[in-house]
Amino acid sequence: MPWRGKEIRCCGRGRKKMSSSQERAPIYEALMEFEKKRVVPFDVPGHKRGRGNPELRELLGEKCVRMDVNSMKPLDNLCHPVSVIREAEELAAEAFGAAHAFLMVGGTTSAVQAMVLSTVKRGDKIILPRNVHRSVMGALVLCGAIPVYVDPDCDDRLGIPLGMKRQDVEAAILQNPDAKAVLVNNPTYYGICSDLKAIVALAHSHGMLCLADEAHGTHFYFGEGLPVSAMKAGADIAAVSMHKSGGSLTQSSMLLIGNGVSEGYVRQIINLTQTTSGSYLLMASLDISRRNLALRGKEAFAGVVSLAEYAREEINAIPGYYAFSKELVNGDSVYAFDVTKLAVNTLDIGLAGIEVYDLLRDEYEIQVEFGDLGNLLAYLSIGDRKQEVERLVSALAEIRRRFGKADRNGLMRQEYLEPEVAVSPQDAFYAGKESLPIEQTEGRICSEFVMCYPPGIPILAPGERITREILAYIAYAKEKGCSMTGPEDPDITRLNVVVM
Image (cartoon, rainbow, N blue to C red; front, side, top):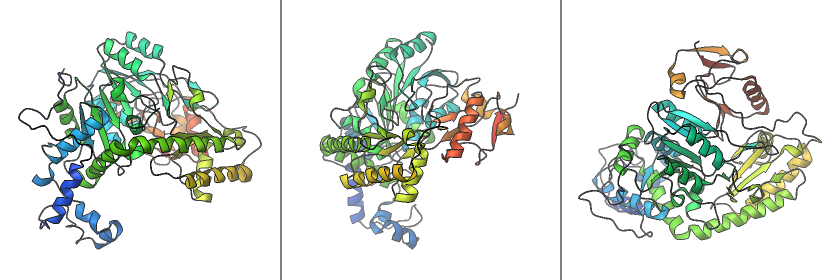
């Protein structure tokens, strides 16, 4: 197979091995040197260091627009890096314990899609949990691979999907010995981790690759006492969202590969979809953030853990809320828990998570990451302070007093709906389709996505049969104010279904 071969850890034939000092930030350093030279720009971008767009310059600042430059010899090229970007990648690989790291400027969506596209093609099977991010399903639409779902357990009290059980993964592998890979969330949005080491071992023992979506697990590589990272567990490829818990700019990410995966082939796949005009603002932010985490991450994430534990203790002292943590660990479907995740169940105060989310924003000017039907998530990371957490706790207490209800009657708790896959995502997405009023679609095969965003886990994906339970779930989520995305009809009064 072209994507699997001998480890390629060096720079490639004829290239010189770069420095590995984690105190370096080569892209940032090259930009600073470039700025000193006052080069006259007869290239893109067209704002010409901000002179052509004074409002943009005022919004972002003089230094920022001067750093928004195009690829050139002194600054390297993201599509085929040979100097400063190459060195930044090698430093990142060293920091993350990977054979190689790729700087990604299309968000972790592009990293996840490159990971999947590097592994499977049309007709190949990939084993994965159904509670994956939309980017995974989008990759299956693009490449034509066939999903084999491992249905996760669900916590009945919280209404959230858990991780994949080892025995369920093994059963899926034995029933589908021709599958090419197993994909694991590490962790889920809620902080739930499967037994990644065991799943890696299972996959490898059957000749399959193991992929990890680590959009919410950057800190696993640098903190102490946290769940195992994908690279340490022996996974083959991992998509890591540096901009979430790692501190880089929004839309910047990393794709990591382990031994035995061809760097050159993965680079080719990345270049199929990633821009040829990589943002140096995003790349520099990855470079600087990697340096910051490599030098100070252990201490920084110890502070995040301490802050999250304090927040949980304070929130759990308020009757009706439940900020869950390691007590969920059962050694299998919850093999480990990410204690930096501050997820709070709200049902016992008589409000859906999305209702508390809206109240926090509208009444208290507090923006948390998301609210679903039973929970909210406040994302804590290296930039948070105790005073902000105290403000959140006070607001939650006041919301309970002002808006809480005596009972939870009428509130939906189940967040996971087992899918019925009728055809592949690609076949359904590109098939002949018709638009029907949503209430008339029961029993039909969906040809588009429906999801609440965040967290971006599809309620329906192309190729799945629409059931009465799914329609009731969508109606309830809309009623409660969840932000629904995906369908061609933005109001989700109609759905596209495959022509029978």
